[in-house]
Image 1 (tube, helix red, strand yellow):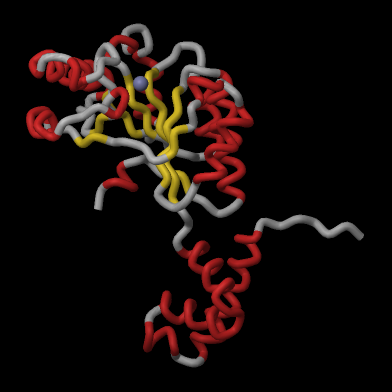
Image 2: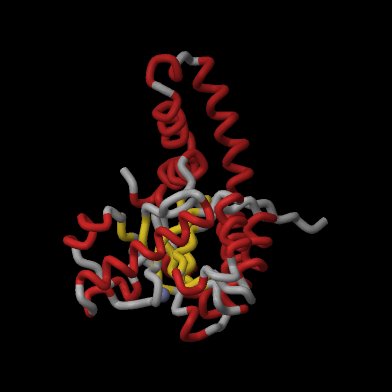
Length: 243
Ligand SMILES: [Zn+2]
């Protein structure tokens, strides 16, 4: 008979339960705390490799999907459908100039629990324009988002990652950068996007993508499916940058 494939996290959950039962009967849990007891059990019985797997089950690696340059009339709804189906929350950094006509999409993002951030009004490089204009780019976008969702954005993704600390104090926004650039805008290739993510992903990864391409939507949902199967959990980006 063919052996059926089971994701390792399910096996680990069963193992964890067995180990918990053994050690709780010894009174370890009461004495040493749940987490330490499980760690010790794993180390004693199955070695360091097992310990790593148990840790992954208790503290799954957290990953944030972030999408810039939207909302897009063409692709954002499909992405939201896929995320909803998978019960995954993402972070969207919106352009002020793209909000008009897309209010329903933005309301939906907000209603479905995604984080909505600011990506300036006209996609400007903030350190290349006069300070007054830079501030205006940010505040105008915040106001438009507030008019639609009833909530002011707290986070912003500066276009090209260009940011200066003084601006941060003036507009009271928290900048959000990234640690994996999928280059989706450049390749628009599903396999390439997935490969870049898979080669670099770890706990705390913030993936940079753009909900403006069919390839991005397809790749993002495949990434969610594959990494969830392997035990990762997807969170909004605030979870990874706030203490
Ligand atoms: Zn951008």
